[in-house]
Length: 154
Image 1 (cartoon, rainbow, N blue to C red):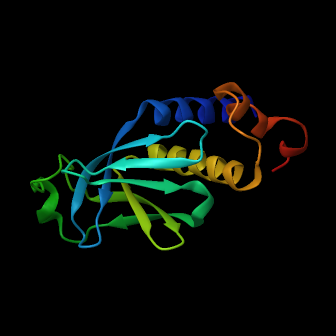
Image 2: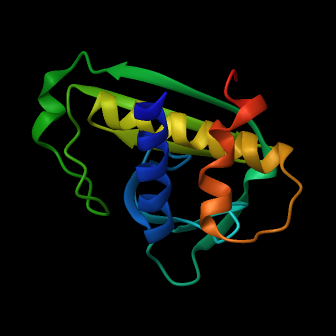
């Protein structure tokens, strides 16, 4: 339980500072983006790195989250790079898909543990956003309650 709390807290603090993550666009193009959890833990801001390409995704609008493992059959693509990203196109990709009411975000990871940590953290943040109606009153109040009392069996 304490290890889970530590993973969650570390992930939230990383997201509050902002993370450079690889996203897959609708046209299967990989794009390096800056993703940041907004104060209050109610939305994720995504900066796609081009002029006026910043979007905010309210966590209350998340409808589904899941992880997919994609393996490439053609190993010739291992050394290719897309011009808009530093993503190396490995043999195995760990994809976390977060579906919102009208859009979806597709996060691409090369490391399975990183993908699992991101999904776990995002599930907790979404659950908290959708079930906690308290006004934002500080970060500590948002990071700890998920593991107190009645929620510890979740």
